[in-house]
Image (cartoon, rainbow, N blue to C red; front, side):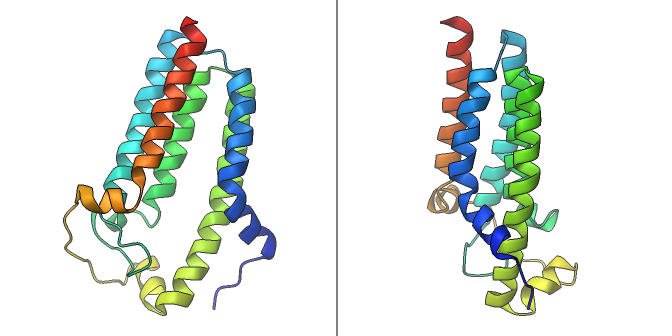
Length: 173
């Protein structure tokens, strides 16, 4: 059984509310321009596209998913979030914001991955370590929008659109 510290579990649970608080601070420090917004939105859009692709393959809590982006990386949702964070930092055009985003992502995603991997190992036994170590059997599953919606990926998409709109408002208002 994989052990995870209580601090890592707490940090994993609080990563979203903490992200909102740090996001407000980052927004207040942001100095976007039309070109930084366009580039950052493009980078962030790649991250959100990866998240949508992953959510459309994920059967959360039912099995170890091995199709789509899960065949390429163990944590495509977190990778997508990190790319979105990089996009936000680019769009914000502020070194302090980039540092806040970078530290937040490294600390919280690391804690979330450790916590999640321990949970998946407990829940699925050897199936998760086999997958993690490249010994899992590939699953043939097609992407479906229904699955992405069931996994509530629309919330991340709505958040992404809202952040881009707020940064645009900061430029033009």
